[in-house]
Length: 266
Image (cartoon, rainbow, N blue to C red):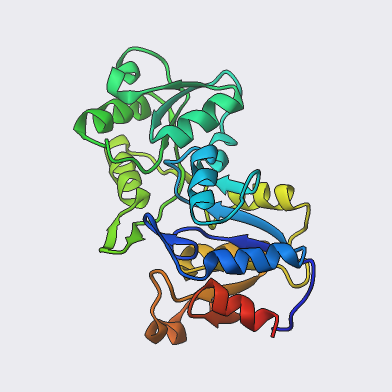
């Protein structure tokens, strides 16, 4: 891939910038280089638990200024509800913030709202407070006609200690209990793809634009949806031995973000 100036970069966070709370070495240097070259950067994550300010602060702690450059699957999920709709938020603070900024009304399933008040939509996102009571309240709302929106269907997410259950696991539980099919808002689906294009001010298939991530089934398929090139880093869930069988196949592979950026601009 030839180095091209002033292209758009969509960058994943988990597995690219950090693993859980541990920054990946060289990531901050790579971002500094891209900023110095005037590239357009947007950090796009399926992790919905953090508010955008919390995500920006976490990036700042990694040495990266991401002010106004973060897009989460919580924002994509909130884009699928209308102002004034009543939304049961089976998710973390990132989704609550996004729903309220959308002008919808957010309710907590632990309050039992779904049992006695009409709910238009249930949004499920990753959170560590998920329990039977939240599952039951959400399922009641779904049986009463609420639609199910999921921030993402990633079955796992990477940490330094290995893979932990992701929001796809929670989504499966709600979909099974509620007897419905979810609408997925995050990567690699159209809701977050459309938001990313709007934020970057670019179009599908624009020459040279790049999605960088560690998971072909999300980051790679987002690149397919956008008709961007796909840059795979091996600092997250995909190992070097798996590259040959990746679907979709990456256009460029690097051990980490810094190595990938070096290849683009060599």
